[in-house]
Amino acid sequence: MTAVLSVASEAYPLVKTGGLADVVGALPGALAPHGVAVRTLLPGYPSVLSAMPGGEVVAHFDDLFGGPAEIVAASPRGLDVLAIDAPHLFARQGNPYVGPDGRDWDDNALRFAAVGKVAAEIGRGAAGLPAPDIVHMHDWQAGLAAAYLAFAPHPRPKTVATIHNMAFQGWFPASVFGALGLPEAAFGIDGVEYFGGVGYLKAALQFADRITTVSPSYAAEIMEPDGGLGLDGLLRARADVVSGVLNGVDVEVWNPETDPTLASPYSAANPGGREANRRALAQEFGLDVGDGVLFAVISRLSSQKGLDLLADAIPTLLGVGGTLALVGAGESWLEERFSRLAAEHPGRIGVFIGYDERKAHLVQAGADALLVPSRFEPCGLTQLCALRYGALPVVSRVGGLADTVIDANPAAIAAGVATGVQFSPTTQGALEAALRRTAALHADRDLWTRIQSNGMRSDVSWDASARTYARLYAELARTT
Image 1 (cartoon, rainbow, N blue to C red):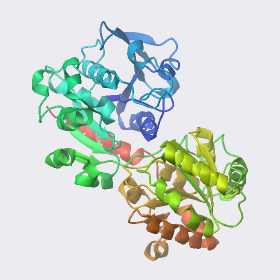
Image 2: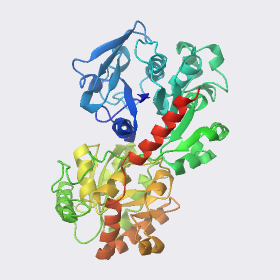
Image 3: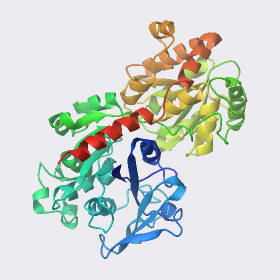
Image 4: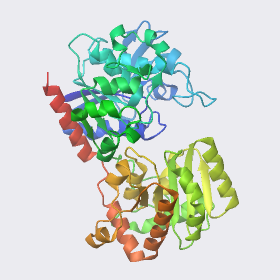
């Protein structure tokens, strides 16, 4: 049995702001059948600690970046969790990263240094807990663990760093370095120094024994300047330890046959229940749907996600007889723009600003097509859920979207393997062409049903990727 300490800033269902939480929450269960035991280290946000009543205090820190802290162990909702109960750092309601004003907490450098420091102490067995074989760090919030371990005495565990989104790197000014407790030698080009400051993701990529990201295509993209965003040179230098491992979804949580949030259950073998969900979705969003395509979006509203392109393409979407249901939140100007579009086109566009898990499930079950026009996308999870629920993904040909959706081109249709629509480049014109192509496919009901069935029968589970991670862990654990 390989013991892994998974270190992250969020994990579903305890705390979630995006796909990172879904991955961190689902992977332990997927790894268990492959001989991997995972404990997940999380910050002790109120939502995490409230899910751990009666948790056991298993370690204590007299001073963790400005105050005492305890490590609380429990197994809330099936996860084996270690929570860092440090009220001075984490006892804050709302978003884990930003305050009520929408700005990053001023002490985020110390808050997530604490996560890295505790992970390193547990990794070395110095916190009174059994030392794991592997410390697996997710994104920049956990990245400093690699630096703490690199400058710690032996023995120490092997490390894996996973990049979920290169756009979020955790850069802080050099003035924070003195408070981190790292030796002076760590502040250099071969250490944590990054563009004159401290780079938390850079630290992970510099010192981790293996680097993974969440799709093979994204692993290639981040080796180039446009995708690497300043870290491509380091990644190219370490290319022999970089790989892409596709994300999956929890197929128990995302199962249209048993999903309690749906208006009617259904399956690939018996898809008739989708129509009841389509009607329920239309009613919830106030849409007058007829025979046209009911398009949907479930997304963070940002330029990265290409939602500005979709807003510009609305005349085409409406012109092909489509309607749109959107669930998302993010950049205020995009929230305002889609809200305005909904007001201008009642019955054709329905918008919910925010995130709601029940609505997300209903959208996947009731939409004809899910739009993901991202400019870059490390993996993406919504298109995987769409495949499972029978909403055809319409996606830009980037990152994990390219790796998980088979375009309905003539060859793929003839071979009987098409599962959705891809478009490239990520421009308004290419998106509009994809909208028109989707509408044409939808008009051929027999063909649409075949493509829909292909998607629903796709394996979007974690199984294959869990096997890959289990092999990676085992190989690392055997090395000295």
